[in-house]
Image (tube, rainbow, N blue to C red; front, side, top):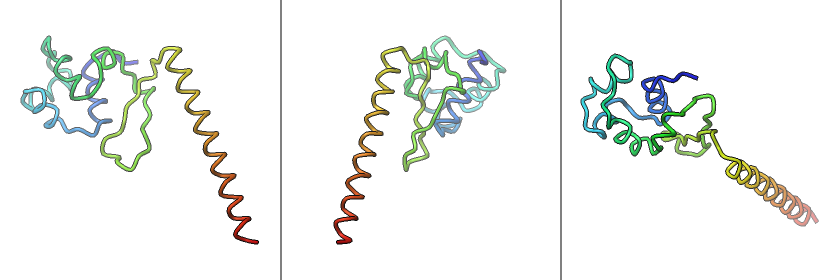
Length: 124
């Protein structure tokens, strides 16, 4: 995992679909200076994370621990704003996620059965 903050913010910004200009404007910085931070040419100011975390809709800790290997996108119709999920889940969150997946699979199975029964009914 790359521990450089500049790489993390560049990757998060890209996954969010934001331009450098957009992020820079949101945090009150010129695009040029923001670009230099992303390139690692200058260190970010001390309050940088506090300003950028609301723009990325992530906590400071999530930005600092961000690892692109643990990112997946929400398959929605709006692909301009992919959702980012950090896989540093606790045990409770992991169990909840697995339970929700099981419930989703059960609902899909039930709906498939209902559709098949309706098809058979219409064929009679």
